[in-house]
Amino acid sequence: MNKKIYGLAEIAKDEIANFCMTECKGFCCREGYIIIRPTELDLMATKIVQQNLEATFITRELLTGKIALNFSNSTTGCPALKNGLCTIHKNPDRANVCKNFPIFINGKEVKVSPRCLAVQKGMLDNFKIQAKKLGYNAI
Image (tube, rainbow, N blue to C red):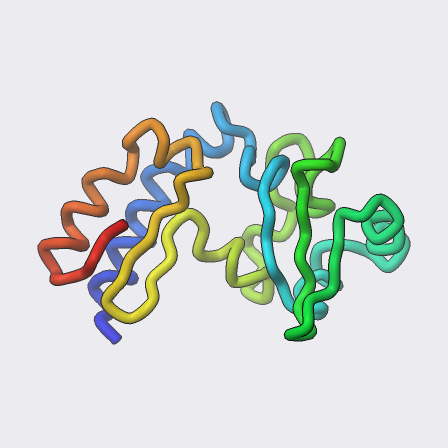
């Protein structure tokens, strides 16, 4: 594992954090689709909220035992999102997809989510260039 790429990813996410909070207001959390473990859902929502998510077909259990959450049909998005801010952002146990978004590193491949508004605006282009210089396939 190359610690440098993970450090660059954290810096890149820090650089877009203000945009995410002030302009984007958590679009990924309002309109996104994520796959999480049941324990991660427990952290995001109370059992009552989880039952409401299930009743409105926002959650779907997968064969892997994980849960798919589709916020695109939701009126409020992620249950941990309040006024455009994540209420569990500082919690180290929050879902990995939430920790990593919009940058995903898998071996020598780095992917940035095209669903991220910051990516669409080119705000992570410099990160992708730096990743390529380190020998990563940046998509």
